[in-house]
Length: 528
Image (cartoon, rainbow, N blue to C red):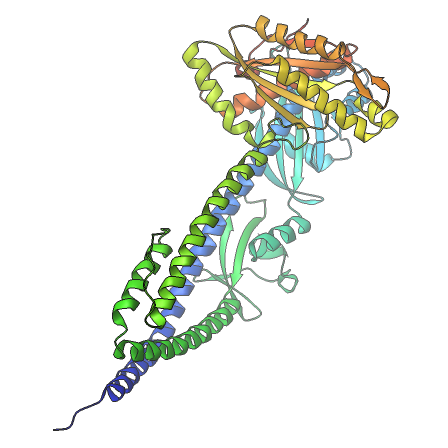
């Protein structure tokens, strides 16, 4: 009778395995090709949805800019003077540049109700597009093709004492630079199409060519692109359509490279299987299974204890080394946990002052608002800014300026309660979020800080640096849209701070209306 030895059996098993894997790879190549293309379609669709969301976010931000301009009290007063009394629009333009010149927009325009262009007279195309919109809508987002290219426009009504005086519009260009920037982010191509013709794209050779889709593919120079239309809110037949696409030729190249890599890995795996088979034949299955069991636990995130054994062979040495490695990993994990905790603290605190930074603002505010609702109290925001801080830096140097910032933060820590949250917003601007029953408590506390700052100069190089602080206070009551209330509360506090600065500094100004009432257009301030 003919018997196969262990080596012959191993060779036979490995040959069968190699033949099986080779056949599987040949069969699966086309299968995976179709699967990856399907996944690519899904990937393009997901990127399209992400871009839709990104554009929606940009539209929302642009509308917020328009609302900020339209809601400015001083601008509304100037608007009333210009349109109602017949004042000079140059003063309105100067006010806009002072107050809102920092806005990241491309074009702006202010129209009166009678159609006059008060700001942005050179943008006749934009004025015409706005006037064609429905007159009943006081605020709107729309796209249009202007002289400078495709733009998204945000319009908001300017009211004075509940009477609409005109409209303000701000725009953002979706030009070639915008297309190229998004191409870098997503890795795909962008096409602007009008009347089935590509008017502009990130693929220069496609400009001016017909736009024809076949089975969801766009062929450019015999190269198919998987494309999806990007949603442009409110666009019409006179507005170009935006498309996003990925080249299939590039995907095929990546697929072939991926298949070659899989083949190399499979060959290496077969060699490894043969080696492992020989080890199993030599009766090392038991210690190997033990190590494999522990390895699976480690891969699953566990660090089990492993007792060392008496050394009788190489596997015992390996097992003991593995036990030492596990012990070292447990020690290292403790260090990592400690370091991680320290990093979490440093991530939400300011390095210089030790106060909270902007990062944890959005996490803390909803909790405080919920706590205030339970206790039937209000959440107050006190924005504080050191007066003439630049003069301190210019006169005594930035080291002295840093010492003043640390000194002021120490005053905040010493005078505040344990449940008050202290933040450094940046530079010389600080924020206090607190819960109190009424505006008097917050005002008294802010006055206490102002007085303590005024009466405690900083000692630096045998000099006394005396500085003061101005502050603005606003508050919010519980509401459904927490994020919106938070932003408006800070905006009200900032406006009150500007009032304090404008009134001579070293004082506290309080906003008497809650941030929840921002939509009503009534903003009053009390100087304390």
